[in-house]
Length: 205
Image (cartoon, rainbow, N blue to C red; front, side, top):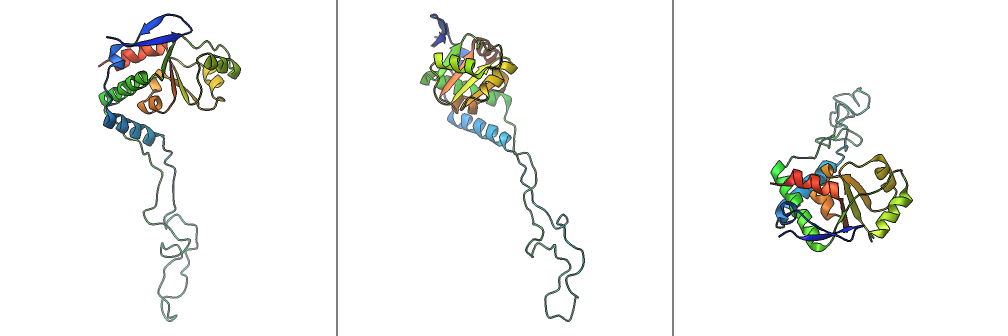
């Protein structure tokens, strides 16, 4: 039997689709999906100079023999201060792919968990026609949203995104970009009716 959730802004009730909200909570699968999501968000821009990239003179520091000191060919050697770095970090992509069905199962599991916790709210629509933060703040106030929230619509308009970007702890996402980590990393999860329909179409096993 489908679970129930209030459609805020109306006095009626809506049935949540069983395909999305009856999935048991798979802790290990959700954890792996969250790790994959966070890894893909890493910049991966850390970089150090190798001995071939350090800007130093190529002249020999001193003659090979007769000084009593160890021979040295160049001042860019990794053995010296300000020399090159051996096996240092280089720009890279930390992301890795999860199987499509595993990602979908993790997202269904996370959605079902938040619905069971009462953190999920289904909204008919987000009527923001122009970029006005005050308008969106008023909508969130009527919905009783306080704290970290994720707002999900099917096609996020520029007006909705611009209205939400100055609101602390609010993330505006399209349903195609929603991940298990986003679902769990908030106090309030707001889904438009259209986003709910599209998620059901995409995630139904």
